[in-house]
Every structure is written in C-alpha cells, then in structure tokens.
Image: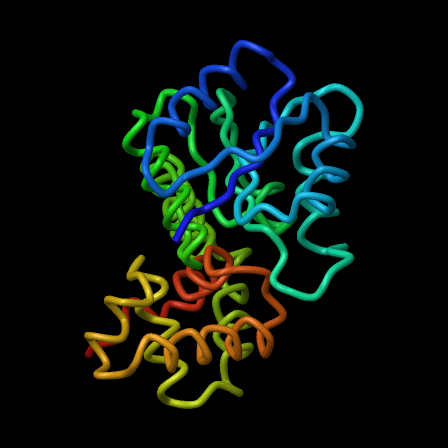
Length: 229
C-alpha cells in the first residue's frame, strides 16, 4: 500500500530535499507541497493525503494552527490525514501545542532519512511517533508534576478519567503508554489487529483525546505504567 504525503514547509530547499528523499522510497508518494499553513490546509482537503509533514513556523497560519484545522475541521468523512510535525525547533511549547492540536508525531529535522520514512509509515498506520529527546522531556515533566505537592491532585484526576474504561481497554491503554504498535499490542494481548484498533478508537472517544500520543501521555500521567502486571 502506498502512503501519500503532503509536505508543508516555507523553505523551498527543504521541500525539495524532503521530496527527493521520499520519492526514492518504495511505498511513499509525495502528492503536493505547501509553503504556508493556509495552503497546507487547502491542499490537505483537496488532495486527501495519508500524512502531512508539517513545519511549525511558517508565514501566516502557523503549522500548529494548520494542524488543528486539518485534524479538527476535516471536511470529508474520516479519517483525516495524520500530521507529523517536522521541525528544527526542539522547544517544549511547540511539542505540547502540536500534540494538543492533534498531531500524531513530532520529529526533528536532524532525523535520518530512514527515521523520517519509518515515522511516516508509523503515523499512517495509526501509531504515535516522538523524537527520543522529546519523549524523555515529556516523561520528566509529568514525573516532576506528579511529585510536586501543588500538583499532587493532577495524577488523581487523570486516573479518575479512565474509570469508565473496561479492563481490556485499560490493558490496551497501558501498552499504548509503553509505545507499542497495534501489531505488538495484538500479539501481547492475543487479539486481532482490528480488535486493537477498535479498542484504541473507543479509548480516544471515551477520554476525549485526539490521538495515540495523547493517550500514551495520559497513561503516564495517570500512573498506569507504574502498576504491577
């Protein structure tokens, strides 16, 4: 199956370099390029790519706002394209804003071509992707917040929000928090991949989340990964 990709970056040289990388890889096809956020939203709606590679800082509409419009305001029947943020700016505010806007992943532009292509395939398949340094900082942030007396109630509130999940859905949520793909979750829990995908969708709906990345962070914040078994 071919994964179609829309590249959104305000630098022509970057777009050309990304296209050159992706066009040489089997199973990946660049279907369009956008130099700003407004154009990215319009082309996403018109071309319906599987994945949008989105830069954060672009003239006019930012990559974060463009992501929000693509994911949250999709004008066609679902699914909306997955958004993989690709940027040189390794700043926590951009990471959090992008994830809240509905991005499925956050990758830095110093990633290797193989890492980039693997990340595109992963988000197209419904998995979440975060640059390792970003993942480590997010975990540290949640750990510090949980340990701080003033924020002691935060994990309790997060834990309470998962009370409506079934035991099996909680198992899936824990494995999401540990970064497992649908295929690995299916093998671990002796389920079909279709069954895992269905449960992931129910988890996102019940918890009011946009994507797997947000679910994984919630699992960590709620302390689910610290439970035995």
